[in-house]
Length: 431
Image (cartoon, rainbow, N blue to C red):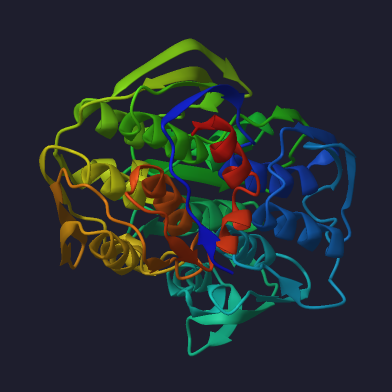
């Protein structure tokens, strides 16, 4: 399905955003294996998160929806999950597939995980390899692709250095460690988002964190205790509206209750360096996660270099930053982002192809891209999102300032992470 973009004269509004997708996944997972009833407020009801929810229902967990975004999860404890009667379908959610691979590896039953045609082309070997070192028994297509067959087995802790800074890989190993004998020690090359560590600690799990080294020592008495969780607004979702305000004339928006976790706020740091007029206020903390209200206004941007240890903290926002770079004065260089090649799509290639169709001078690198700006975006064409929600949303933002509207192919992928995105963007857009 193709979506048609729309132009905006200005962006104005004051809104609350849906809950954070990463935190929503983790809240469901830990609530399911905790003792007692966990109440989750602000759960993101996107396709990705609902796949995680449905899988735990298949595994014998009672999950009740009280009202929109508010759920009660009746935890079954670490060893209360039951073997599913059917294949566990992850849809397009890499988070669901990778985190549950770690969780299911230590169960006492057999499971099969699969996804849609896009997820089934994303490599899983970086999760499989360390889990097998822990004693997991996993069979996969061509040794690295879904579907995965997992025969639960006794796991043991290992000392493992992550080959890349990946929150999904780190989280899969931490979840497996809940069922492993002895100590798991993992070392990250760079900091990645730490929602799993924060939430494990909130549920009562003792972790030792020393810089980029995390360890968990399972002495056989681990228990997770039910919590009340309020999921903050998703900073990755907020980024699209911030970007819209920055590049659309005479714009000002306020976004309420947005998570500003320091392992996720790379986008804010980068756009400020580019010259963005952004203000954070009403800063506070809930359930171990920092959050704030954010004001963003039209800004004159400049090109910068985006590379190094900052990349893991903004990996999901890089296609959007490339759109902003097309409106910045001078050259923007994005490097050290080869991880973008194995996301929902090859996001480097997809972004470069889309920008070129809009008339942007952009060079594709093996691990990033170089964008020359500013340029007046043309429109009047069709851009392929490659069924990638972040590519589709990034070009919806670009469409606000193009000379002509254009089509985005397979844009229904947006519902994977943000079902109300287009409706909110239209609400903020004054035409």
